[in-house]
Length: 296
Image (cartoon, rainbow, N blue to C red):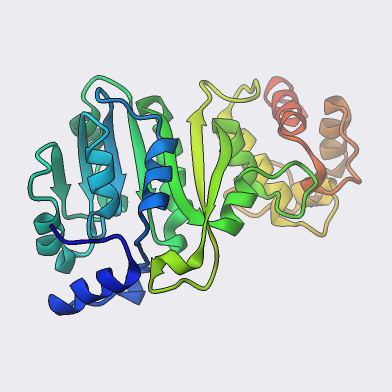
């Protein structure tokens, strides 16, 4: 059995197979038993839990998950790693490897195959540059999972749990917090990766909130309003909504200032505030007024 518990041993194993971490794929292999256990712990797994892992790498986390779950479906985009990955998973009979790009897969079919008729847990150690598109796709299917555990850039994790008005708060903050309860489970030092990344990492856990954290008439409209508000961070909320670019425009133009002012007035929101100071509930009030007052 290959030892994947330290950066040196992982590096030796890669070199022995003529492999190296691919920068274009954002590969940073986690090589620390304690951190792997913490990620698995955060999934609240039982021996009845089906798991979907995104980004198998060399299989270090896959092994840990396999020992705790009913079965593991793991996805790896790098075809060059597949032979070594499968070698490292010999004896882990409840693991299925899919050599594909998660972003290109039919996710409804994938979840059916990985979870069956139950809800599963999703665990991912993914390249930081595709964290946002992966999370967006997972949240679209939050009815299929009971927990998502992600190893992400620490800065992203701070944004995910930020409070309204904080420097870290952005459109993604509200998107995540509308759909889930987000928590930082712990931090992972740079030194336990191969190669050593330039930034710190954090374990982020998401628990779905169904239907959502606030009451709205139209989820998509709510997210459009949030994105419009954060798309013009230096402008007042009123001006940000008026100048929102497609596809996030709200149906009025700069000539409809009175209409926008009326919308915010009915929602009880001061239009001179900056969008980043609004809470998710305040954005929801704007959305409800908009949906229930078509003349606004």
